[in-house]
Length: 262
Image (cartoon, rainbow, N blue to C red; front, side):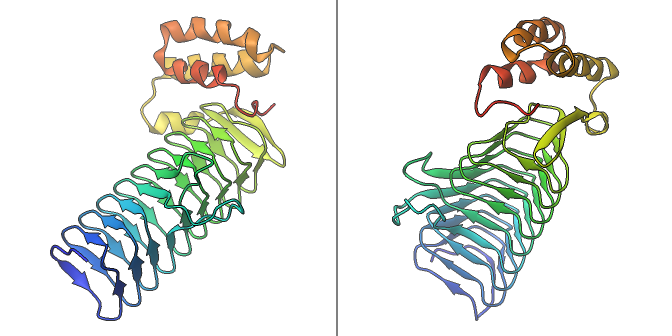
């Protein structure tokens, strides 16, 4: 173990390959082992387990009983040294699990910065999570899922493997996503359907009334004009040429993925 300044409880187990930054707090019965690098000012509450190869940024707070960097649940996984990367300023509450990638996938699970992961959230192998997201209790990502910035997941919501959710989308509680959710869209139900745009969230984040109106026009073209995705893209692009906030909508639709919710 390489340690800068910090507080480590005597009951914690810290492996010899672990590198700790400055002012790291490690409380009772925490286990950190394998090739793990931890940035400055992180806090690990009792009974967290962190395994490597894992890289953790600065100022992350891990609450009790987290399981971070464990080998994944994919039956093809055979102990390969895949990785997990976590950014800065995340809050990871009780019983959250984040697994490393697979060699069949990206080889890395990546979590961004400034996110809140509430109790029992699961981030599976090879997922990519952006910044400023909120995952409510028991939200679940299957393998290979991509979540853009500023996404909100309601409690017990789950998404199928290889699914995508675009930026500023909002997923209702207990939603089941078997298709992709475009940027800005509110989705709910089993299986999830679109219910307008996340207007309140956009207002809170400083989007102008004009930009929100343009995003709503793009939504209407996609969902209310009975156009195919291929036919909707050039029409939405005309709006994006004037309002850059609509560009993520166009770029998301160009990548077919699993197909979008309807």
